[in-house]
Length: 502
Image (cartoon, rainbow, N blue to C red; front, side, top):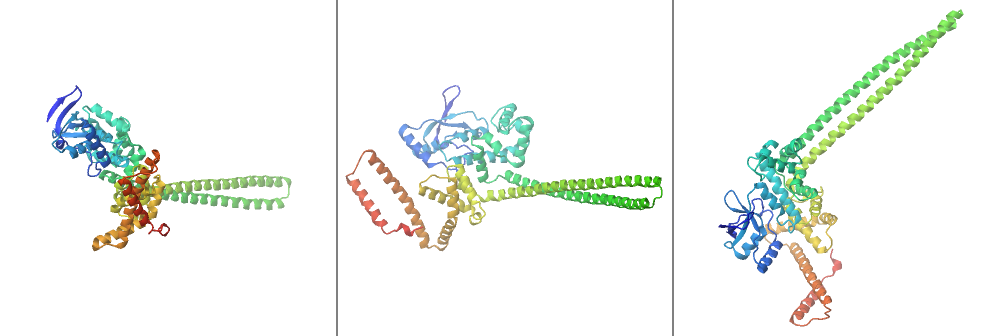
């Protein structure tokens, strides 16, 4: 292995293909290289030679570790073998984080978008949840960055990188970092680390298995919501007791006023009786004045009664509103706690590879939501999700129409029972060691559909070329063979009456 100095900023090393190590974060077992990209690269290499655009670092073990270029490396190994020497550009190893940043851009244009986003989210989340937060449990620890995880050489630069990821310096970044330590890295922070949209990252997080920290975080959030619900229920009980006290005190005040009204009424009756028996004008005048004062007191007592009633009703109404609010908040906290617990179950049940069958996050999300329906999920195991997704994808391709989330949802609801029956037949055949004729028919129908679509596509291409060049007929051995095959297909198709099939 020899170093070749090219410029002040670039060095290349001659190394055998078999000695190059993949980027430590490239999960080739979970996210294998894509055959279409490999085939295109092999054709390009055969046509123009092996371009020296592999980039790597010299890692801690003094090995050449790729930053990016895994498809090109694999294509070279297939074409030339492990002993073939190539020039690899070597850049300075600037921390583990820089390897992830390089990987995020590798073939992101050519690869399946769902798989690429899932891999990047998975890489970032597992690294932060399982390694960084363990090594650096506080913001200050991370800023110091003694292990140089973030790919910088000074603490102030670590702070810059962390500020970029966690939305600010000081208290803002520290709060976001502490939340990540407590609950696991989330969508907002990941969106600062990756070029994918927040909605794509959210869909990836919804599909992928939970890290141990994220699972603990959800369990902790569920417990926190349960505690909130209990606190709200206790508050509702306190408000109910306070309401009962208000009603009791209001009743006592009403009873006191009633007693006063009864006393005033008795005095009024007595004054009326005395007025009738009064003998002179002075005595009558004194009694009249007393009657007037008694009436004023009766009016005042009535007003007090009304005020007490209004105050009582207002306090009771306010208490009822407050009680209803906290009871609603308690129910909401219970719902949120249940949602967190359900998330844990769904994440452990759902296989993210099923979403990766589709080439858009929205389509993968539609499949995930559809199979998570309460009428469907009990009938699908984790192991059956990937083959079911492939079956749905195959049906979409058969229709040769635009793929939409609604179509995926409808196909899932229409076909999951048939799919389960087919899976049971396969299991039965495997266990009994003999072929079931119904299963054999299903397999042949599926093969006929695949072959028929391929043949139909070739016919369409043939027709297009003939129309483009104004060919009305073709001659020669190939034309004869073609017509012979076509006549056989037509003859066989007579057996089938499409109207008898559903």
